[in-house]
Image 1: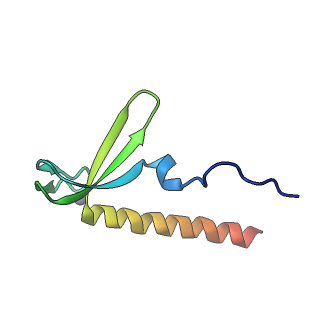
Image 2: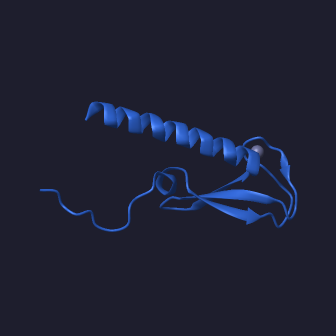
Length: 87
Ligand SMILES: [Zn+2]
């Protein structure tokens, strides 16, 4: 008999690298990965990582964020395949 899971389904994104949030840049600031400046009013993504003592934010340009999504998908598919193979 399986126990019913309690609470919301956890997501890997929110607990490892911070929750991504699409924002409109209020001022020009560099992308934390490729260092390309993100202009004011340009769309970018903030990754907020919550730790016990402080909140750190990484700002990524759309191109870097899309690469991050691709990498995340590849990593998740790899783990998923391993789990299915082993069951
Ligand atoms: Zn970038």
